[in-house]
Image (cartoon, rainbow, N blue to C red; front, side):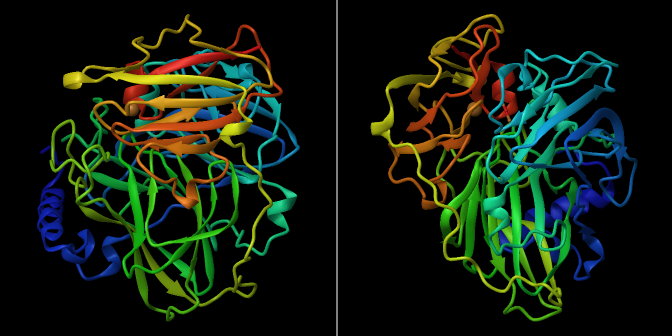
Length: 486
Ligand code: C2O
Ligand code: CU
């Protein structure tokens, strides 16, 4: 086990012991809140003109020991600012590459022309600036941006390159929902990292980190007002899925997924999130006493094989200190309500009408293969090739796209350009909170999943869009394909 200081050896040992006893990491370490760190809330950029610069940085992740080399946008020491955009706006973005390596920036979930998409083909050389512009056509929801350079996505994401995008629109704005960023509307980017003995981030392509990071904060806590609070949650992991819930098993409400609000809130006690997915949830703190606390946890123990992060190993390429445990995600300290507290939840949200399988006029089936003995995964017997177009989709086609196999393990499937609706899962029913506009979904081991989407607005006979597993190590290894719309 590579651990970077005596403090952490103690921390890790106590953690392993504490997991066996079914308690949480920090309550075993110390009973005082001083071991927690305030959840970092990324700064925001708003308007129609956005400048992003990706640079090397460094961050003091732990309370003792040397700082860790990282990447961040706009001087952030890990991750980047949250971009806030309005549906309908024409935005101009300038992305400057301050790394010594090529990068790209992809606007995950956005429906925009392929040349603006920021996939592997829109390269940004060191010291140069890429300036995409596009109209924001997406619904109000939570999206994100991240590097997408083929074979470098894992390394650049792992070092910290990425950021959240919040799209607003009049439909969402008319609802009585929490939307004070950082107060009752909380961005929550979940990932984990493993650290080398010199404190550097381990960028060898293992699947899991040992330490949870929420917005880059280790062992995070936040003070939240005694009222309805919204979280915008992004799983920005390498492979780990999160099975989220509260320590008192309270009911909470999913109000939105990848590409928009749900038609009505869906009440849950657990929420499964694969890599790349976003969910917006509401939790009611009105009945919690000021001064009390509760914990958002990930209940990842005792999952079926194929659940990423369920492997019962504490180290190695497919193990981590968090694997097969129920671990703490965020400690919440309840404080007094704000003056304009949201004290109720709308019974209905937006009037959605999703694509059904009977709407489709084209179908595509993509098989996941490879992966035997740790070898790369690929689609349809072909490792990703930068110069091969794997699918050509007619403009305005309504496609039923099935991925089959979930070979060897579960994966996270993402299709660029569109928001789709999941119409079938061979393993059983579709969770009610998954029904909606989505761009990414978790596919279980051995499962077939079908989605329906319309490929409208943006034809381009030469620039492809990507489809891939969103585990960046799988994507870099070749579990990616490309399609053109024409
Ligand atoms: Cu989040 Cu192809 O990307
Ligand atoms: Cu995968």
